[in-house]
Picture (tube, rainbow, N blue to C red):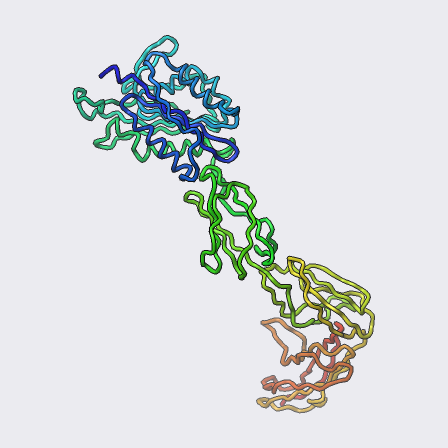
Length: 521
């Protein structure tokens, strides 16, 4: 029975494909600890989520004497690594050893690390290491009371080389029971060990170590570390990237949607993508690999949702479909109050199927049939306009470059001052406090009146010192003066002389001020 303790079984090797490289995964056990092979296979399937058949999955079992068989383990690893002309630099190596198998891995890397250093990343998982080893002609048995140590030729850079260690040192069971359940694991007290866990669960024994949740967690951590490129410690978020979108994830509904998946890497080799319209599953696109460009012609609708599951990670992306060019109701023209002979034109009440930012639109205006002006957005400013009447034709396009039907508008520009005066009240008219003041105002301009604002005594729009008592909105008085009335204004002002000030703003951007006085008693 004691002889079997030093017999090793080797299960080699599984190639697991992951983004840009593969993982060479192997397990090494003692004679009575074969459960570790099943555990490693289970964790490999979880890591790949059962989506791909295992490549080169034939299992090999080899017997090693406890004295010195590290060379055989080294040769088998290198043989598998080079199969099919593979380059070690494009592979990561993960070895999981249980009991004497863990000691064999430690011994092999002690003697032959230089032969393995060209692997992209290396992870060793040592589970309850216990057993004999002969290194540098010194034979010894590692177990409780004798610790493993970090060989001088091992690197300390955890970006390329990591050691995971889990052990227990409890004496459960009897040495004469026929089962080696009383074995203890060796400690590995070195800060360069990436993770070291000591288990002290009551009833736990040596044989049960591979099945423990924390043991499986270490294997998963080692696989994820091995899969990521050097320099990355955390996988980038899994996502769906749309390739032919514009605006706010908008695609021409008459064309195919082009997309690809990014950052599957260690979570899965490929993924299925569900396509939903208005929350209802339409179809499932299967086995889509990293960066593989796919094109899909969606059913007619407003919104399509792509949903992909990679392991436990979900990525989704909503696509807004746009089938028709935009429309707008009319052209609005307002004066540019910051500059003479300048007008602002914009498309009023724009409607569109897509979901666009204002900068995704483009406006094109033809002035007086000859001069073309364009810019992004749905509005444009025309400067240096001559006096007189002008005509414009306007079209707008969405982010897909589809143009609306044109609209036309005429407007007038004049630097002449607007005509305006108070019809009522008459100059110096007497008004009694507590009554209502009726205001009738006459105004006109060749381009029309935009608004008339009437103030009491002085002009102020300050919310804490507001003097505006009436605003007459436009558009009126185009070419010919037109009268407009204010709603009755309550007279609650102090007795004495007061001034009513009318500020007339015409549609050419000019301002004209008119005053009249009243007496309050």
